[in-house]
Image (cartoon, rainbow, N blue to C red; front, side, top):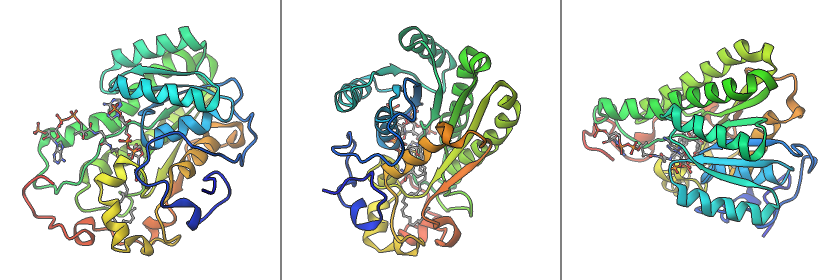
Length: 303
Ligand SMILES: CC/C=C\C/C=C\C/C=C\C/C=C\C/C=C\C/C=C\C=C\C(=O)SCCNC(=O)CCNC(=O)[C@H](O)C(C)(C)COP(=O)(O)OP(=O)(O)OC[C@H]1O[C@@H](n2cnc3c(N)ncnc32)[C@H](O)[C@@H]1OP(=O)(O)O
Ligand SMILES: NC(=O)C1=CN([C@@H]2O[C@H](COP(=O)(O)OP(=O)(O)OC[C@H]3O[C@@H](n4cnc5c(N)ncnc54)[C@H](OP(=O)(O)O)[C@@H]3O)[C@@H](O)[C@H]2O)C=CC1
């Protein structure tokens, strides 16, 4: 197959990216291979999907990584594959971003094992399609706690334990799905909107300590759990992505490259920015998943 890393468009992107949750089998650098040389990146949710690809691409640019989430077996397997594929160190650590003490223990372990943290990627999140009428109070709270509180908790712990005195770089993984409002997505859209605000507030507050805070806002990204849960394959089969100006879903490597730009000295005068990486979809696409996917938004049962 053709490498995903080349400056590619449509025909190279799908279908080999769909459904895979693994390391790249081939890669062509478009940035200098030394871009993150000997840096350390702490990636929440780095054991799958976009987070895993960010770890893979960062390691191919000279970086060691920590991949941190709840499922240790998944993380351990991913870390072994990433190290074998890239020759860099990858430390799998168990955290729940809703529990600051678990983050603090992982950050202490990172500093003990790898000696520093240069980059924090807040990628962990939870989502599902659900009409507001069927969404329980606890379901809304759960998504806010993972996506928004989790981003704040991790940022605060890493700042206090390392970035405050050494500077650093934070990249939050947002989403453009809430920019025009979406049916069935009040929980995730609200959480990501809060994270966009958090990106700007912390950029202002922590800039003087040498900390940049930015975000990447993806649209539909194939080969991920988020894509599957939100009806990506059904949308694709129905030709819905033709409504996107670039007429396709994005891929994980493209998201990793945007994240790498913001995490690296290539963006040294950029802070508080949200890099929209959605093929232009929020500008033009229909914004009601329920109609697009044939799901009634007044439905009371869970999807
Ligand atoms: C831009 C678009 C352009 C064009 C669109 C065109 C067409 C659209 C077609 C397709 C769209 C394609 C792509 C989408 C585009 C953009 C996507 C944007 C954002 C994507 C975000 C993500 O993908 S996040 C990553 C996804 N991965 C995960 O979610 C994995 C992690 N998730 C979890 O761990 C769980 O799912 C969890 C979030 C529920 C948390 O687990 P846990 O802490 O164990 O919580 P529980 O105890 O299980 O549950 C807590 C309460 O929540 C209720 N719940 C759980 N699941 C559901 C559900 N499915 N529906 C409703 N409610 C649910 C649960 O019952 C609990 O509530 P109680 O009241 O019962 O206690
Ligand atoms: N896929 C898409 O089309 C889009 C995705 N995004 C964003 O991209 C990011 C990655 O999504 P994607 O790759 O699709 O999905 P994945 O489900 O593969 O990634 C989510 C990760 O978050 C981790 N996670 C979930 N809850 C917690 C928690 N409480 N504590 C620690 N880690 C947790 C999961 O690991 P574990 O289960 O081990 O905890 C998992 O690795 C998310 O921020 C998502 O909102 C944005 C727009 C579109």
